Length: 99
Image (tube, rainbow, N blue to C red; front, side):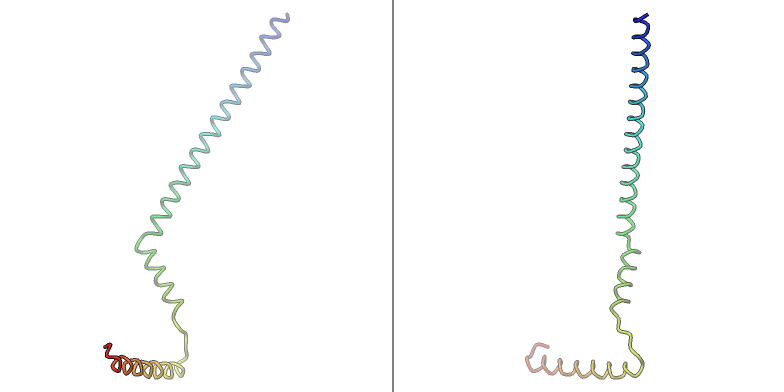
């Protein structure tokens, strides 16, 4: 009787170990799949970021952010000041014989 009881207990423990190992193997496989999916996602993101379209959008956004928003009246003063600064700079370059 005791022998049968021990055999039954060992069989139950063996089945439990098999279930645990199968569960661990399944979890490991899921982690591998998730890692592969993350690597693919990162590669796609790098490809997207390095594309000429993304670089063009980034450049356009930078240009848009760097522009000055001014009214029409202020634009006239801005261009006169720019022209004046240009002439001062040209006189300086001619004076220094750099141009």
